[in-house]
Image (cartoon, rainbow, N blue to C red; front, side, top):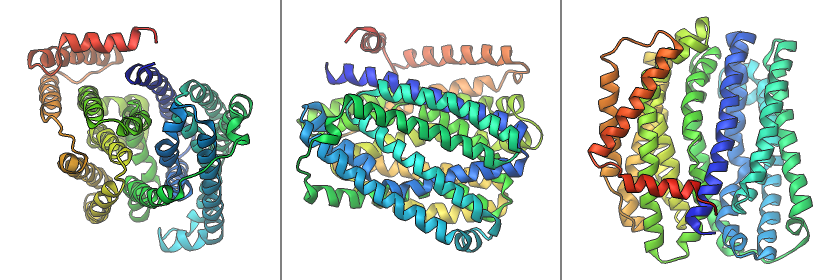
Length: 488
């Protein structure tokens, strides 16, 4: 199977996984806002955010490393090499995970008091460490299947996790009327998914556990050093808004903010950017023309989708929040969602470019850029939150991601020797802006049917404008259709 065809197949499965998990997250958020009061929902959201940040340390770069170093072995069916990296990196992750969990359990009171000025967060912080155990192990197993390009197994496990999450989180939250029940249900669902993936490995890919081989430690450890630094700064940058909101504002604001962020991250997450890493790693070993051509296609088509979706979410943000959420949630989250809607195109583009730099063996570039922007992000969050409240965090985050994308694109040609087409970004922006401002001339949608009609007309208008300005051609659409619909 060719690289493009294989990528399409696995990308569609990854889209299925992302759509399922993100929709479940959105449904859960809606239900939990009716079950829990703002403070408990804020605690629930904060625990998950903290666990994701702590996973940076537990991950220790192993998720990217298995794709970087084991992908060629997986593609060439070199089982001993793949098994060696799988087991060696898994041991590293388990050791890092154990250290992080122990430290959090021991110093929870200190962190809650001195980092957040909220001693009552000590118990939720310990819950986030328990959440981390299941989440980190499951994440590594998923990375292994992604490296093997066997997304069907991840898809099945995530379907099981999604069903259990809906059942357990909602039922236990109803039973306890507390964030504790919701988090307990979430942990149980992730643990089951991890067990399913481990069972599949034992039954179908037993060589990963049985065989032994050599690991190139001289190449691996420098990469891990840069990768863990980049991941830490990246996750810290992604979590800084939540950290600053929880430190500077009442804890319920974390819940309000997470509602808006969940929509932005859910839609951005439906674009299977992380699936590109094994593909880029494989292409990086070939002549540069292969990687350059793949980048050109992925860059253009990703922006063709991401940019209009961001503008449409911004337009419908007020309708979505008021339609789905109640009381204080609707009042607080509407403006934040409008700003964070534009994060869709920048966050997905940033991850896309970060994976490219990692694939060509230059994780130091994202690390340095993240470090510089992180300083700005901390200052911007503090100043904007203290002066403008919750909306300030949204503006600080969006501006930070814009700076990251600009820096990545400016360094693309001198570092990666790959030029990018400005028109691939400008044309979707132009078409989306025209449609957005045209929508503003109409009355705001007052019903779901009206909103759907607006969305359909906006999508059609965007498509027509793109054809008119040659942002995409009929032949390219036929090419995409053939890649998706033709059998492998």
